[in-house]
Every structure is written in structure tokens, then in C-alpha cells.
Length: 334
Image (cartoon, rainbow, N blue to C red; front, side, top):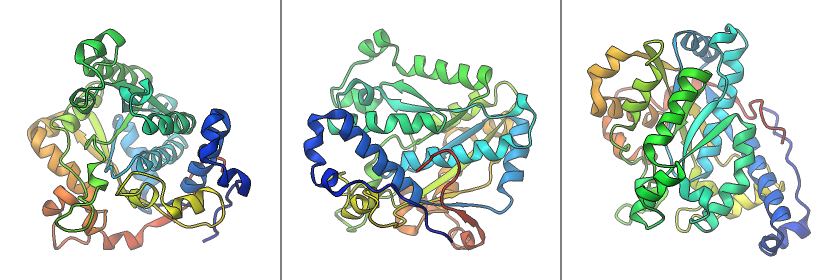
């Protein structure tokens, strides 16, 4: 498999990277190039019949893509996976069934600049998300409120309260032919080190009801919605577990010096569900079903909370050897 071409960042810029924070435009440009280099080397694995199965699902209703979340780097990898999905679906379905983009919930505190360096990195990555067809929907999260980054009253004034965010997503899905992608764990705790095991925690329990609500909403118009499981391994290879900073390997790849695959994204075939099926499974059942579908395509130490639901006798992770790999789905010119 041919290695992707990377954009080389001049050595002088690499050495002066931290100083470039005084010149925000250059710092943002270097960060963007680095992110695109890392995404270019990311391995994407899809089932052989994925295009056909995705097109069949699109004829029935919108997609709700959900992914695990170790570090913010894996959100960009998930966005690239759904960008490729869009291109495959739209090749052979009628225009009124095509995917016109994706909506994704993001913590309002990132946009408002109250997360320090994390907010800076978000602003630098935002153009890449938009280029991949992602519409960012700001919402004030429970974590924002607990950590003093805002109140629900302030969120209502700014239009970032959860109800307003959900209404925007509802309009996008039901009126604008968009689909949903999000990380239902809503935390990067899964990429932190568990002191008892010395390994990362792995997947955390989903925010209660988040999968159920979004699937039910997506199925409102047609009666069907398709769950798209996205499993991202190696988010902590880009942003370290101990301090959430770029690893040495990420800096090497980001600067264009070497082509190393730091992340692997495994996408399962879409699973189409009717509103009746979603209701029967209920919020807890949907969480376990979707969490297990994501977990079984991860390495065992990354499965976390949902590892106990993965059938020990299933082929799960090993069956992915049959998947075909594409390193650089269309959508980014790196």
C-alpha cells in the first residue's frame, strides 16, 4: 500500500512552534498542516460491501454515527470517516436521499475560549472539520457547568443550552438531509491512565439517553435511522494520556518527517433500526447495543466499560482482517 505524501513543515518553524503562539495565524497554519499530516497517515478500515450497504441504508433514513472518544484527535478521524461515507453514498442514490452534511455536538466552552489551550486547538482544527462537511452545534455540557465554565441560564441567553442545540440538530436532520455524528461518552476520560491497571480506562458509559434520543429523532420523518459504528484506536498516540499534549511521534508525523500510522479507524456496516425497534430496546438497551458494536472493533484494552458485553466467542476484532484499507479517503488535500 502506497504511503501518503505529507506536507513538510520547515525545520525552523518546527523549532519555533511554541513561539509562533505570538503570531496566531502562523501557529494556526502549522497546527493545521500537522493535523492534516496525521489524518493522512491514519488507516481507515471498512467492510468490503460497505458502499452498497451504506447506500441501502441511506434510502431508508438518516445516519447516526457514534464513535469512542479517547482524545480530541479521534474526533477529527471520525469526521474523516463520515466524509468518506458521504462520498460513497452520494454516488448512487437519488438526490433527495443523499447526505447533505453532518452535524456534531461540541462543548460551547471550546468556542467561547474558556478551555485554555484546548480552545486554541479547537479553533485551529475547526476549518478542517468544516472542510469535511461537519456543522458544529455548540452546547453547554454538564461538564462545562460542573467545572464552572457557564450556567444553564447563561447558556439559554447565548442559545447554547442543550434544548436549543437539539432543536438545531433536529432541523438539520429532518429538513436539510443531514446526518449526525457524535461521541456519546462526552468525555476524554477513556484516554487517561487507570492507576490500578497502568493502561487507559477505555470506553466510558454513554451519557444516559443520548443514543436513544438521537436515534429516535433521526427516525422521526421516515420511521428509520441507521446507526454507524466508528471505532478509533490510538487517539492517545497523538495526544498523550498523561497530559493531553502532542506526543513525540505525533510531532514527527505532523512535521512531515515520517509517515507513521498513529490511529486506525474501523467502521462497521450501518445498522438500520425502526422507531419501534428503538423503543423496544429502550435507552439502556440502545446504549449497550451501540457501545458493544463500537467496542468489539477496538483492541481489548480500549473497550473499557463495554468490554464486558463483547461476546467472547465472536470474531470481533480479528474479523477485521477481511476489511479493505484506504489510508486517505477523499475530502482532504494533504
